Image (tube, rainbow, N blue to C red; front, side, top):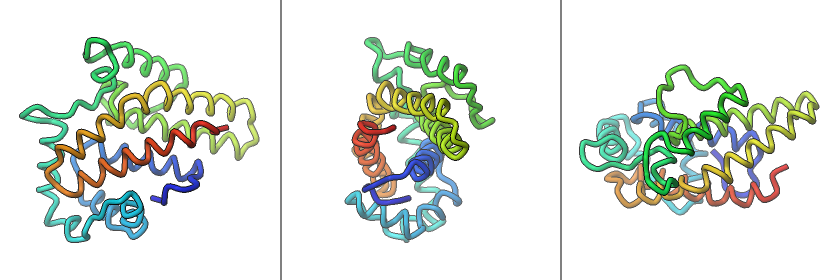
Length: 206
């Protein structure tokens, strides 16, 4: 995790991998350990939020898991994590956005993590797609494959501008408002700040 100043492609890929982990499933002890690293804590601090290390102790895990559940699973009204719910004229699952993401995954021939059974427009899948595309661009740059570099760049920009920026900030705002733990409020704040900052990155992303 880094400060939001000049973010390299490698750092962007790492951030999206982190965000995928955060939103994919309830928190684990591994996630708590990662959140306690100095670089992550400093990055949250830069975003204007502060997490005390005691809030990330393994003894707090059940509380954080409960917060994840009430935020994203239920049983009461929870925050939807699928793009189509936010951008379709009539909110629905398997909307046009879902179809577009599914086509993109197949067109690019990207292989997602094996455990995925969620719809293609789930927030964690969009984060994983961005991670995979950034990693593919890094590989293309390293091998001096200009054609693949251009293809990856176009796909990265389109995924961000046509999908992620259009709805992810709304999810973050809800997380900030409805989280019952300071940790998830901090995650919501940091994620929103990163996505909004990324608009500047994608204006000149080549």
